[in-house]
Image (tube, rainbow, N blue to C red; front, side, top):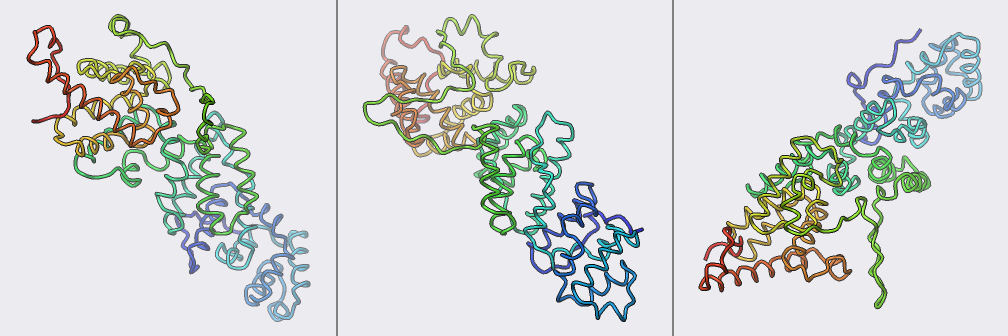
Length: 442
């Protein structure tokens, strides 16, 4: 009997192209980890097809006949392609050899070198492992397989970390990561920002390892938007039809995950039809109601589960208290995710050190890890800085982020000038103990 297929860690491909080495490494892993079997391989690549593929590889074809089918060496080289295929098929049918013995001779490199690459890719992924979901047994194993695939593509320079981030999307990462892990990402981003360093994909993986990230995101999303888009299609291992089929499946499972493009602006004179938020928007409480019901309202962190742990509860309560003291607590703060609330709090701490509008704008941008968080925070702050502005109107809700930042800076400047003008007035006009944070130093 043949030896079992070696582990991927012990395998070293001698193929010259990264695309070929990548495919060979996936094949070794699939057999060694039990995803595919030698019998399944010979079902998809029968002896006659293998021999036709080896028509220009006389030595390898002869070795298969001699070692697997028991053909005399002097006769093996004289066999026609058709005869060689029949001899190998007969040897398998009669039990002279088995599939594992054939694949021990036909090495992973040889399979990739001589067989059709697209068909090999299809064979390796017939089980559609990416359809596994978090509530299914063995999901962790499927996520580890996806991680392995991406890591090998990265090692072979067929993929970049930016490709992974672009395919998964920052919005998807922010939505799927657990709140505690997302808080670590925000903290890490702010620490890097203070050192003048951006939060790039490599530094993100310092906090969230690739395997942990992949396990948090639906595998179908990763398969569709990273594996197919960034690897299989460019390498001509998959067809556009395979991508279309995966996209349809992704849309059917969760339309929100497929990240469709934003809807066009409504026609003039027609009201905007905005999507219903995942968490229904609650009536905004008054300031007195906030003070009375703080313990009930602030320990929920939508869209995170309502049973947030003590760590999240304490962090949210502190952020709310800090922003209340600054008179910058958004009316809709109960609907803000904890990382966004913490970023707003950190932003105001850094704004105290800024001396120009350019510096303040930079502080605002660097306080948030992605555009989604930045936009959400700016709209929430506009609500508290100027309640007369309806942030649900398309003109505001769909405005460019640059415009939203300018509104916040303008309103902060307006508040600052009002506070300065009231300093000569009676003490009652200056009851607030904490001054507005802008414009900083004079």
